[in-house]
Image (cartoon, rainbow, N blue to C red; front, side, top):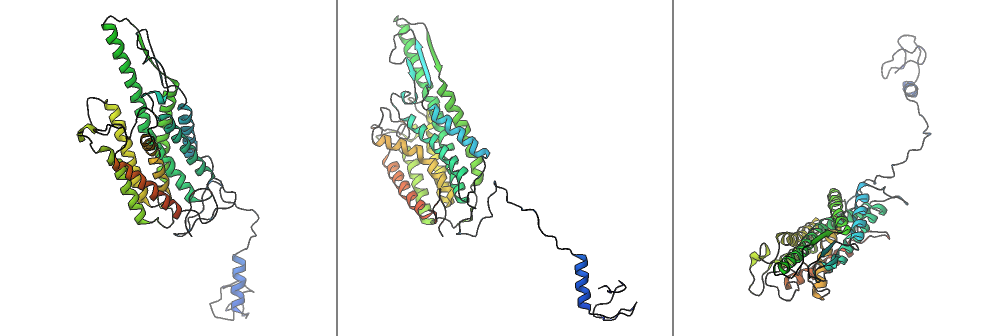
Length: 379
């Protein structure tokens, strides 16, 4: 402490200054000293949180509180997902390839869209579903009212981006297969003296647009996967999550089970299907198994989005095969060893049904306690 009169040090508890002899209240002296050392400055500038940052996650089981009107900025994930969605939707309406020739093969010549590649597939709607889900995922991330919604939207983008890649690969393989069959037919007719010297296969704009959508989709999926960590909420029901994971395994593995004397090895190589078509079909199955199992076992909102995105296209193809929509049963029905009716294996059907029921139960349990967009947590 300092003496109020001479300014020299006064030992703690001593009421009389040893230098000038003045006496006083040491406590008052201490208070005066603190006043001299510390100055209270009134805050004159308002400090606001950055609008592009999320609040600190709340304790487990509670939904983070987001200020009214809060919006995230247009992050790279949103921009790339929107680009992938637009490219996929637009490409689904464009021509994939065009075949021309002076050989008498009219059944092969002309313009090909997605649904024409196999003589009547339902691929156009599959790509439309993928594009729309990418756009929905981007909108959820952009307009979300909670961190849980952001994670659900990110999981949706990640799942769709992964599922889209093997479908793009199968489209590529199908376009090449059609062109190769047409060329072989033209050469056969020409060799038999039936005429024809020119054959041309030209890829359409839609082919490249869909390739671009697939590339952007996988990039978006990789970026979105970084948001799959702990969201600070209570985990989803363990029993339901395990059930959903097993159902995904069944839905995927069912399409590998041989029927009518088929061989298991035909899933990986056979004399009727090209290697690229086989590989892309196996990739479709792998995405459902991996994305579905991981998504369910995460037991988080990101996982719910991942499951929805991973199985959405597979679910559409399963439904169209069951209902016999289109003339060409594309995967998952196509390629099942020994399959004669073009419909999915019964194990796949049971698995898909359980996936849908389990997912609905989990989504209901994870619904937001307050009104808002996206998937929140229970309170």
